[in-house]
Length: 179
Ligand code: IMP
Ligand code: MG
Image 1 (tube, rainbow, N blue to C red):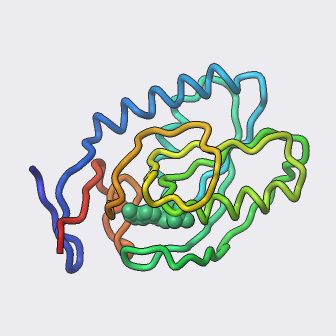
Image 2 (tube, helix red, strand yellow; image 1 turned 90 degrees about the vertical axis):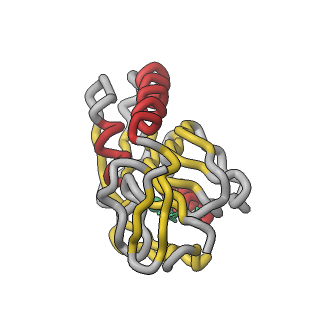
């Protein structure tokens, strides 16, 4: 299995780009079927979701807007449990369907906090599309409308996800090797 090194850690290939592509196709076909008449506003949660959002948007087959928020909760290989908002949302979402595009739902703290903030602006509906979900790490009861792949509770990098800033450019996803 292919291995890489980032900073002080070694990682082994766990999800090849072909599996990511397949998961995106399945997710996009559901979104296309369910939301084509809802004029949804997609919201990419930076930084981790930039690659997932870009690839997913190319598979959306109806006219569709995207905007961006920037949140941060991770340091090194763990969640700090606190969510910092670094860039907020400019668009008005009252009465609109919004779809949050998240790279991974881990503890669920980030997505829960953002859903709470957005709900205060009275949107019609807030949906969540996440490429990855770690069911064994999730401590919050959040409804995930579109999930690409469920994965074990291990630290991963690649396809937008980072280890202290590195690894986001990798087209495949890698899991940290026991240390
Ligand atoms: P949560 O708030 O614990 O659900 O985690 C949210 C954010 O932490 C995600 O959007 C990711 O950006 C980051 N994150 C969670 N798990 C991982 C991981 O395994 N590798 C890299 N980043 C992660
Ligand atoms: Mg993220």
